[in-house]
Length: 68
Image (tube, rainbow, N blue to C red):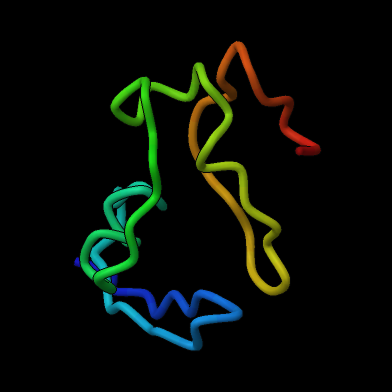
């Protein structure tokens, strides 16, 4: 199974995650706390991130567009 390296800034923390891992799950693995009131369902927008390198795969939530 594919594995990816995800680095979070400005904390400069990196997590190695398997394909299919959500960014919220990756933050938890990197020991970064994000106050997400929707539990990672993509509704509240609290886990909105900027992807500097690479691609994002998966469904678009009702709160965030694919461009966001």
